[in-house]
Image (cartoon, rainbow, N blue to C red; front, side, top):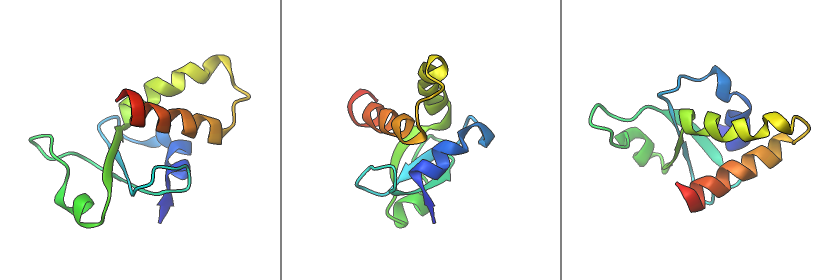
Length: 91
């Protein structure tokens, strides 16, 4: 079982078309998994059946993390909290 924080740490190793799905509540330690949307851009049934909710596309997360290039000392937890904030309020 992966945590959201673990997946964020490995985000650059993922395919840009991958999508992260997270079980509610969205926190750095929430259970998370990676899936791809269906051909018609829907949530895969497997993700839904396992209780995951759409979170963000890997490509979007990578773009958000660009903000931290000027703050290399930012912790992984800070980065994860920023991504959660974006997913909650801006996506």
